[in-house]
Amino acid sequence: MVYESSTQQTKIMNTIKKLASSDASKTTVLIRLMVGAVFLSEGIQKFLYPMALGPGRFEKIGFVHPEFWGNFVGIFEILCGAAILIGFFTRAAAIAMLIEMSVSILITKIPIICGQSILGFNLPHVNMYNFWSFAHEARTDFAMWMGSLFLLIKGGGCCSIDRRLSKQKTK
Image 1 (cartoon, one colour):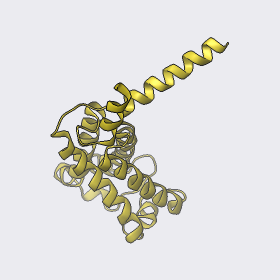
Image 2 (image 1 turned 90 degrees about the horizontal axis):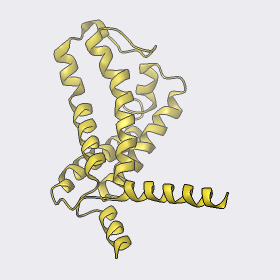
Image 3 (image 1 turned 180 degrees about the horizontal axis):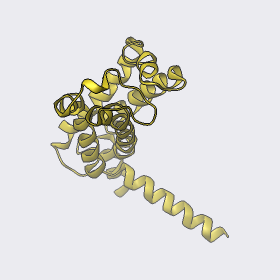
Image 4 (image 1 turned 90 degrees about the vertical axis):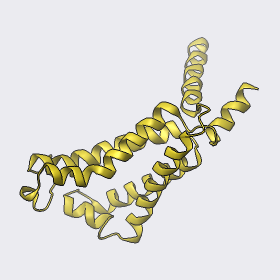
């Protein structure tokens, strides 16, 4: 029984080490700074402009408890955006943002191309949209999704807390 617990702890530690590891690429920092800054900025704006980007927007879309979800997503974007920006558990934050962006695309962008609301979420004037509306509206979400995927694969790069932590552990 003690052996199983020790094995389980080793697996958990290996998972944490893998999430915190990073490659040595100097150019990865550019993607990390872009992705982190955008998520951090969007999270802050959900509190600065609550009717347009926070709870008010979530209410227009059709979320139950829009106050909770608007604030939750705002805090989530601030925390993950800051973590990505400084390169702290970059891969874990990237996974979280991939999930968030996937939900955002499903709820707010796919209805544009389909011409109808999905899963009970509303999109005003959805019948007026087309492929080019979708391409325009989804451009930032797509770029952030791809940037997050890149960071999941590569990690935080050479100038990240992740890299410093992984160097200290190997010494």
